Image (cartoon, rainbow, N blue to C red; front, side, top):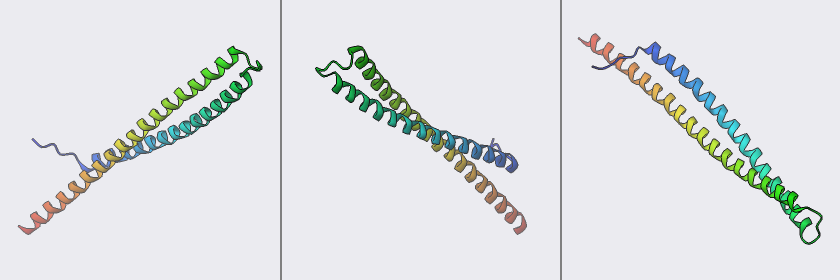
Length: 126
């Protein structure tokens, strides 16, 4: 048995899918901004670590504990960057899925409309 979905229901699905796409696009933009912040933080932490290492080399201006903390902060920033990159990739994939859903529903509506025109023509031709 073939299920037939009324056009108004499909139009409602299309509106919902478009809203979902907008939400996913907004999430992607947020993920991109977070990624940019994390990249900047990695750069900052790397520069700070290099400066602290230079100050600690044989001069003793920086304690080993402080140097360890700066190195740990750099590694944490790098890990945060990896998470942000993964989040951006997930968000981009979700946008792709939402966009495909919108296109699928548009196609189904177009086919449904075409089918109705064909049926109307066929009925009139008899």
